[in-house]
Length: 327
Image 1: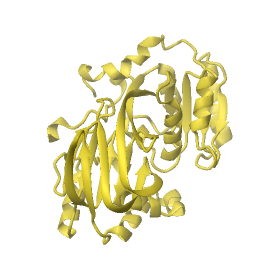
Image 2 (image 1 turned 120 degrees about the vertical axis):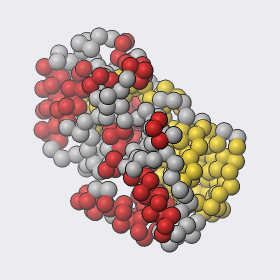
Image 3 (image 1 turned 90 degrees about the vertical axis):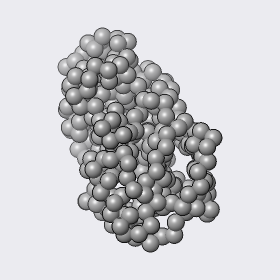
């Protein structure tokens, strides 16, 4: 359970209005990732109506617009809470549309990863997720910006992006995160990158397999890639991974699984402005969405940009306050 000193950012925006005041809302869903849309819609409308809220607008994503336009439309129409149900890509698109507005993001997890929800302690059950929203807990978090695109979880260049690019869609649907393990095995023998990683003006030249820039640190199955990452400290965690043999891979994976801050073959720094430049074009990703390969990835933090519906601090374990015991 979080201590009193961890409650401020989760409660500040909740204090704007009493919890029992109805709010206008909208629901954005990815129909290709969420099963039982009719049942979900009935549940949301019923629970919001019972609470005295107006019926929400219902907006579905499309191939042309995965959620950003719908989120902006919802805000323009006066929505104070925007529910999103889909995978990490759908959530990222909606975050893009909500960042910098007064509307709060309410995550009803769907799809494969649901990493932002997992990092913020948002439940996977839709009914419990709606109850959480109605109770009025809010947390204001940072987002990252890379190549003009917004992300809330992680940006990456190298092996991690290659894994996501090559993970079979059908296998992800059936096996979830195991699909990424199969994809990773295909790339273990790839050549290292020669990179220059510049964080807040200081440049490090390294040989690496991947560079990850994180706003939060947890991956699938509870794996804590960046245990000190905090989404509301105005900074990003930059991890340079450089395993060179089987022993290094084993040490790295074991340390990550255990959530240790200091792990062999992983170097972590923290900052606000990050530039990664490779000796050749590399695959790149934002919150699991693969973007065009390039020789560089430029990232900055946008502090206090997004309001998210979360449990009140006394109700749930805080998963994103770093790991003081491992420092």
